[in-house]
Amino acid sequence: MWNEPYLETCCRSALHRLRLAGPLGRPDGLKDGPCLHRLAGMGLAAPRADGRFRLTAEGEARHAADVLKTRRAA
Image (cartoon, rainbow, N blue to C red; front, side, top):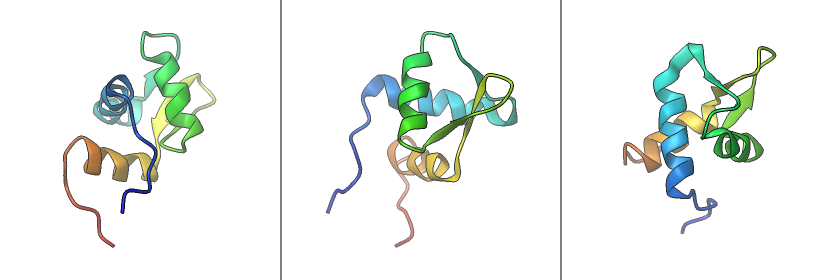
């Protein structure tokens, strides 16, 4: 059964860009800023003290499931 909130296409793209950014993170204030804030509200991203966003473990798993289309371990 599907029990996760739907991610809009723009937010899935922002999640992927956040994953690609790696340890550098994504800065706030770019076009995907609203999506990064939405992802942070969902626990998939987290703001850092330097104003950038980092991917959380939950975000990593969601990226694998939604973007890479891999199955999660139950």
